[in-house]
Image (cartoon, rainbow, N blue to C red; front, side, top):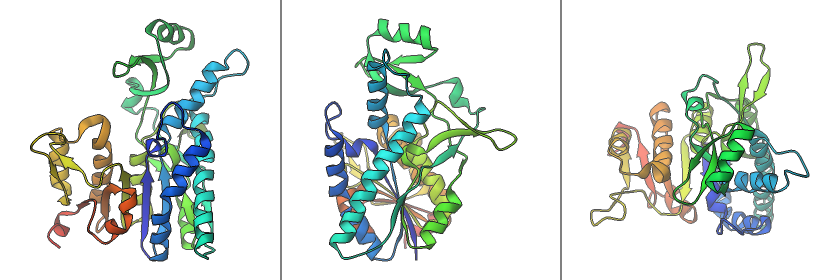
Length: 319
């Protein structure tokens, strides 16, 4: 049986960034899981990961609004909270879809820890915005009182920024492997995993940072020896020259081609580029593996090879 990691974005679960309720987010998850069960019925071992950017923002915003009543929520705990809540959504939706099909495959969400190095250069340049939008005066006041770093975000206001270091290890990898071998569908690496550092005696220490979900999913996929990393997006394929008269949709490209496109800025640093980079790194490090970026509703066509952008090792391009 082959193993696949399917990595959903947190924004894919939120249709209205300001007003989507938790039940509305669950409804979005429930509409999404059908193709995942199709994969299980085809014999795939399946890990589902998910982003959490908007959801962590919601938690931090609630924390800010209630700061006169309760203590604030640290970022690593907010990531843990979202792993539980979004994991619950996926477990419930997957179990319900399995029941509708008369299947009894077990499903479990694993609270996942991603180890980062405190020497990572990202800690010297915290660039990942979290929490709510603020006026400049309010942001600077909070930065002075709480030791935040802040930055203006796309003309919409000022926000707190935290580091986004690269994960080096996912602590639960071997547990996840055993669950997969036992036929369990696993939800893991939610929000990139809770960022932690390991002290010399093995003590786990939480870190106020966020880990990129796609990079963490690629690391987990590689360490599990997965055959596929699939990142669903809002478009059926990746394009170069997006939005220009020269726009070209990509079907199958090599790792070398993907890196050339990344270097030339074809994908947009804040949008598609991190996904292409994560998939490219996974394929380059995992011989024989395939990475795909495409639309969630087209997962059956992706598996059939008729949809999505596939990134493959050089020898696979002409196969």
